[in-house]
Image (cartoon, rainbow, N blue to C red; front, side, top):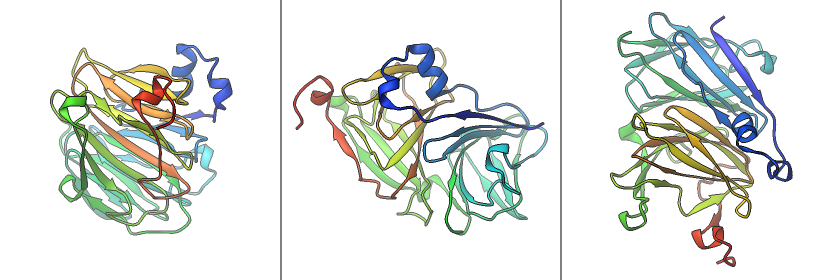
Length: 285
């Protein structure tokens, strides 16, 4: 069996208040995404987002339908985004080949029946980080290189959050049903991502942290603004963020993260801002 799937249920914020660290990790942290020659998935009940990872090494890995989908093939009613965080790889979609280098992205539209992931060199295997959401229609599959990203420069060195937001699979670049994905790179000396932070009740989100230096970690903050908690996250781990939760992190070293969203709209700016002063118990600003 080359596919493994975990399932996570939606949590009410009132229940979340009673969770200790172990419970937070159990419900929101995805620790293992990449295993040689396998596809690993977590099916969430937040907007039905699926988070996954595929690591082909000596042989290809074919995308197969999950039991949770009750579908003839994985993308019968879904769209999928893939971002390569490993060595050079390729994805074959119904016979059409797409080559992905490091940090290149690929959108795969609803209705694609055969999706095959392959590494170019087994010594430096590709690692495909995946997000998948339900889709109401079919849009063309398309590769988006890092150079084609819609880039936003935010933050400053004074507040330790200078960063480049690379919008890859978003509606300013290509059409999607509800999936949005991109990656944020922190500048040297900056540690905070998504600060000032926010919530967006019409969309959920998942973060995947990578390029975290060895022996370093990221402290990810979550929860309603008045009830925040934290999770320590290692390299190449992901965290699920409910619509009622902030999502922000501070690292003990420099890092990059991939954000993926699903939900009711595609408006990137549709957020409820939460300033540091508000997190500290100040009045709404």
